[in-house]
Image (cartoon, rainbow, N blue to C red; front, side, top):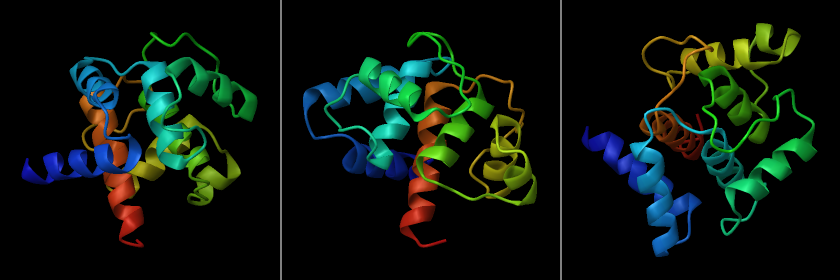
Amino acid sequence: MKKAWALLALLAASVLPAVAQSNQFIDRLLEQPQATFGASAYLVLAASGLVPAEATEQQALTALNEKGWKLKARGADEPIRLGEYCYLIMKAFELKGGLMYRLFPGPRYAVRELAYLGLVHGKAHGGRYPSGQEAVQVLSSFLDRKAGGV
């Protein structure tokens, strides 16, 4: 549990500026029983540097739609599926993935790839909805792994 909080602190320090608005965003995301599409898009795109930290969720969704990735455009308040979230991470950080992901890039094999790397815990089913806390933990674990050069 201590590691999860340490990773959360690392994420907050590296992704979001140290202002009250960022703390409110993280608190709101952590409280979500199902991570929303807008918050997840903002979190990943800000962490990857594809949108500035000052951007809004709507600006992150606009940037996401402009990328042309295979993600169905949805409302900011709609829940995101685990497969979509993992695919967003794979695309935003330009991860190559394994053989199946390279042959069939998409949410199905993105979630399997991140589960193989040990970043997704529990059922690695792409159709389930992650909580806000799980979304933060997956990205935080990925950033920690990336910083370690693994």
